[in-house]
Length: 351
Ligand code: BGC
Image (cartoon, rainbow, N blue to C red; front, side, top):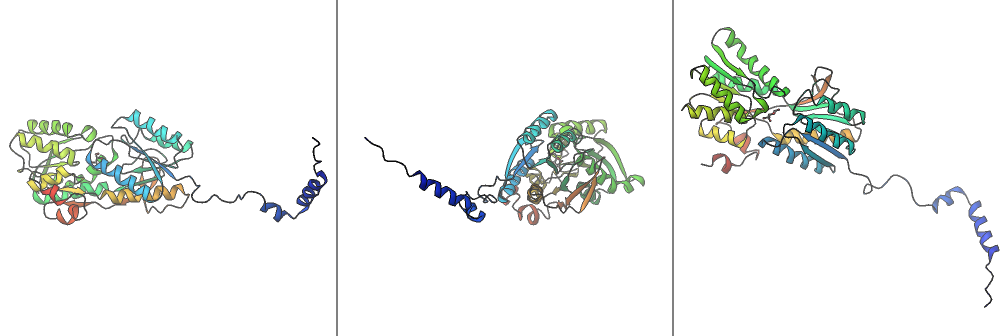
């Protein structure tokens, strides 16, 4: 069968017309370029490298931070190293390699984690220290509660009850800068009492990894070496206060010797209700997690960060945001921890 000849001359004319038409018209037949629509944009990704999830407060931090980041339309990837420095570094490396936009870190070890800041910076990623400072590094931002003030609040509450006597200090982990800040605050208040001879520090020890079991061993040692001659105890947090109170219970002294803690852990506030712990310091975690989420997302967008304070970390003055803690005892438990929904009334007052 004879094929029909193609009208090649017609195709030639069309191509010529297209080639000669003005640029604007030519653009209109190309696929649209321009900026991608919001739907096509990759969401901001925040990496969250945590020391541990083995304590009540950090579970709250994890959940509230995730919620706050997601409420801002960003994503968060979370790792917890449970007190292992090498693991925290390798987990942070994974986050860096995965290309997070900003890295947020709760350091287990204030010094060792400087390596993480360095590695993140080599990859062009900024780093925020969450609750605990990273020392000797070019840290970009530090957001926490005023930890020195926490120590002052503890010591003020206890000296009001025991202005004279033998004091035991059960510190936090020596590897955590917050433990040092707390002690600084405690001694700021105690110093005049110590200098005029009213207060004797008869035992003062750090607690490895802040664990109740290590605090319990320290308190047993304090009781043994002082022959039970103890009038007051300042414990660095509610976990360590728990270990202290167990040791006092074993000697029949719980409820007779004032004990301070911090965190408003459920067990801590229950002990306050029971009368075996005197006070705690409440730090509304939602404020911290929301602040860090907001600042991390702003940083990822390249916006200017408004951090009013500066904290020295041994290398630089780190732009910082320090939130205000709240001392809590039996008299204001309801109007603070319970009103805020940090714990429910049923949980706190359960038998
Ligand atoms: C935090 C405390 C916490 C402690 C142990 C500190 O850095 O500020 O709130 O109890 O670590 O995890």
